[in-house]
Image (tube, rainbow, N blue to C red; front, side, top):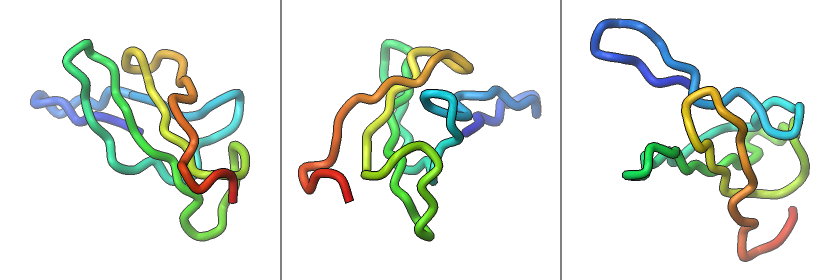
Amino acid sequence: MVRYEHDGSVTLIADGYAGKRLNSPNDVVPHPDGSYWFTDPPYGGQFYEGNGRRARRSEQPGGPVQAAARSAAGNR
């Protein structure tokens, strides 16, 4: 997951979780504290970093990604 800057450069926000690649990062929301919150659903049936829908948080661009929440439906 990247952010495109006004000058044309690209900033890496997150590329994996717990040593595995992200499934399908989606619904990205920047928080006022500088972190990014996003969902990582398994679109297309791909499960790169676990089974289940989860919310993730990247504290800073390129920093570690943390599990923020599991879906109310549980692991699928």
